[in-house]
Image (cartoon, rainbow, N blue to C red; front, side):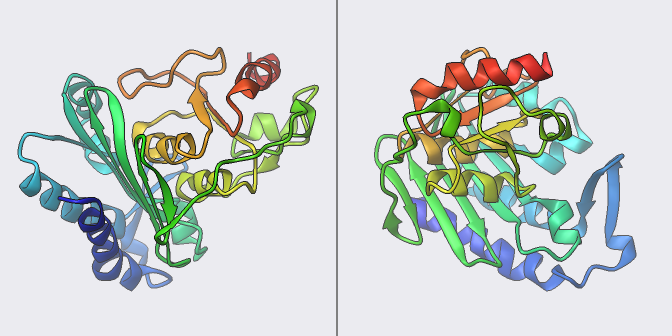
Length: 261
């Protein structure tokens, strides 16, 4: 499938499955996978639809979906060993969705031989779609995104996080961290368009970070661990850092590490 055809799948999932449930969820259509981690009928149905369509187009590909992993925790391990993978986050920012906030997104990424080659982020309520292709660029609603131009001074870089510990303990030498938008499908595009200069997360699920990481890299940014080691789909450990300026990765990571250990 070409890039636009896959974007159309995300839009169809939103139109048919997600939008009809926005601000219209019954109590029995929302549950906790674990304390604080919500899932809705929209998450489940959207992932089933996207999985079916992608698997039909790419029978050899492994599908790494958020909700499938909640059912079978072995899915990420199988995906880490596969040569062709699609990640799916059917409703990224589920709590926002449940609470009636427009800040949620549908996200898919394609990974070949461990390298992310294409990604899609669709924000249904904002009617914005972001596409990235490795080595070819990034676009918002068909318009190419410009290269990022962050401040030269690390102390002036604008950061965001959803981690409560960091929000309550400002890392020394950095500008004040603001609260992120509680959806990677909202956060990463805001970095890719220059609204903020870096993002830091504790949880590192691939479906959260692979799509946005490619989007940001195609406008000059980079994603890694706090110690500068690569962020890879097959490795799970805490903390992911994305910066608009690759040279800021080390000083920002070191400052954050002094707070989180």
